[in-house]
Image (cartoon, rainbow, N blue to C red):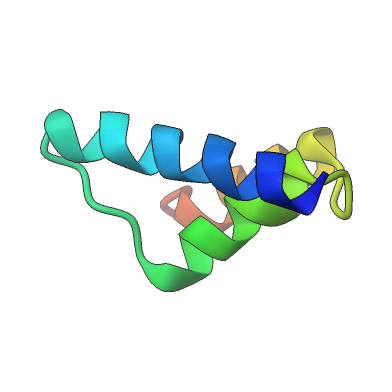
Length: 55
């Protein structure tokens, strides 16, 4: 499962790089955790929105 999660995260990172959006290591790690089921995607989305929302 971890191998599949890493492969998926690399695909996402590659697609984003093609579009000119590089990922930080912490963002890549977050993708791996979500893809492997270690972290809830819905909770992750909420946290990212809060992190990047202007106050």
